[in-house]
Length: 296
Image (tube, rainbow, N blue to C red; front, side, top):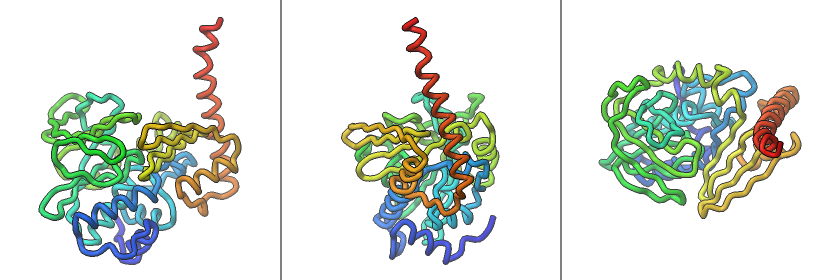
């Protein structure tokens, strides 16, 4: 892995709008995490274009400073590097995202963080896109941040059912993956490489199959799934808009999600719009099929 320089960290702080992070503190940690979550999107644009970025934290830090985003290995990987550069005590953990709210394994497809500051540990995750707006104390309980979250201690398992020791579970409602489990044991970035290769290159991977962007703010969650732009407000109100043209699509990418497009050529734009449109039409056809069958 390459070295994260002081200039890299300065660029990162500039991107998230933090001029003076101060010395490590609980208040500083919460402010940094919120600034990142509100400004840096969860996104798979480069994966969709067939040029997945690596998960070397220094590379991820530079990409974020340049106006790009990424998914959990990039976002939490970069944020961990930023915090360490500022003097925080950070631990990386192997985790797993689950559509099944009762799942107990730690899968390996997610990087979670804990940070020790102020004499206590805090759960930190800027890599979900629809996760907490700020860190949570690493103790069992319910937490309200516009949306409801619950942290629970958990004896995690691996896919085959073998015990992997102690861990934690983050539970939330109203999202595609309502449960994230992670092991208490520390992990290294090298441990996430196999999952990253599959998630970023395998045709079966959801990141290869569908374009997605997410950003959490104090107002709610913005989600761009293909050509459907969805806003879920903290009061539960939901608005859905279908983007009908490439200009509208790329306007949302820049304006709603804050993702710079300086690295996306006209050829890239055409290729991505074509890919997104084909997936959108296939989704529309799949939705229409049951209704047509019932009518027939």
